[in-house]
Length: 86
Image 1 (cartoon, rainbow, N blue to C red):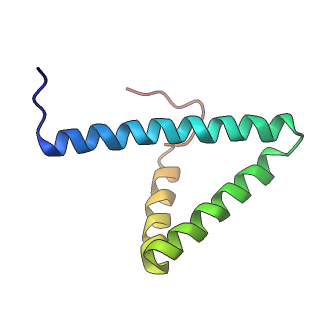
Image 2 (image 1 turned 120 degrees about the vertical axis):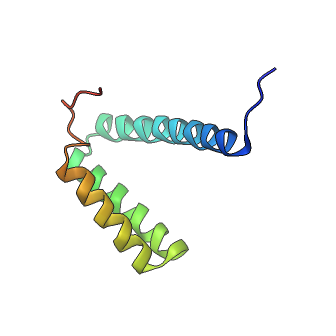
């Protein structure tokens, strides 16, 4: 029997939800590309939709803080397609 602490179980659930969400996004992205929608249009629309929903739920200040964190991650190369995971 697996005995997980509450925090570990919560982390596993969040990780699984992120994986499923990524699969949904990848499928929608592929469908858009197949329909002839440029990657830049898909990306801008996805970001705009996400930001609108996050501002609605959490407010502008929290979203600005999130964007600051995302900018740092971008500057550190986290989103480069050729980055290596160590």
